[in-house]
Structure formats: C-alpha cells, structure tokens
Image (cartoon, rainbow, N blue to C red; front, side, top):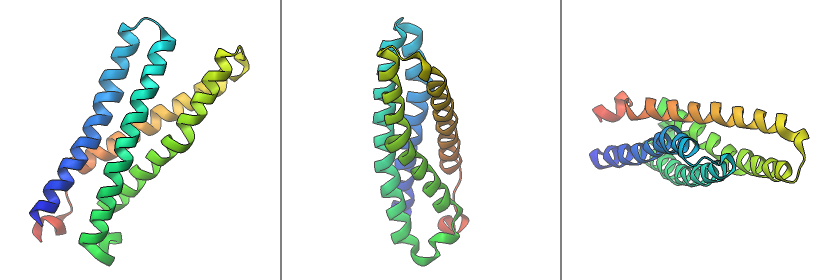
Length: 151
C-alpha cells in the first residue's frame, strides 16, 4: 500500500510540477525573452502540447491505479473524482482547445483578422481551465484520502 501511495505522489508531482513549470515559468519567460510574439506563441503551444500529453499519461495511470486498488469503493473517494475532472479537462485541451487555437492561428496568419475575438475567447478559456487543472492537482499533491493513509 505504501508503494502505491508513493507512486501516486510521484506521478502527481510530475504532472502538477510540469503544469507549474511550463504554464507559470517557461511560457511567460518565452514571451518575455524571445521578442517575437508569433515565435513565442508557437513555442508555448509545443510546450503545452507536451505537458498535456504527459498529463494524459499520468492521469490515466493514476485513474487505473485507483480503480485497481480501491475497487468498487473508488467512487466514494473525492481524489478519484478530482482525477477524473483533471483528466477530462486535459482531454478537452488535447482534442478540442489546442487544435482549435492552431486553426485560428492559421486563419490569422492567412490575413483573416475577423477571428481575433474567437482567438481571445479560446485563449482566455484555455488559461482559466489550465489554472483550474493546476489548482486541482495542487490540492491532490498536498492532501490524501484518510482511508488510504490509515489502510
């Protein structure tokens, strides 16, 4: 049981640490130092893609681990539901928001300025959801299910 908790902590720390490092350190530094907004934006997109793929992997392993270790009682664990939300939001990033932003960027670079409002909307939505995933992850990192600790 201790090995399971340790591996869960390790995966959570990897996932949430990468969210923090990329979203709140690397990407702002890219925009501050690269000078070219387009270059920084493309670089940021690649970083976010990488962190989201990492999140899909970590989140999937964590959910499967929870299902195996807790069985049918897994649905009573709040941590399980937080993981489900985090993984679902990461899926939204990977399969909807990121491709949509890429498409909008292509339209903008092709001279279609009419989609700027749409880009702003998707950018704000992405930023807010990214922060939500990060905060949920931090809540998981600093807490535990009482039953899991006492078992």
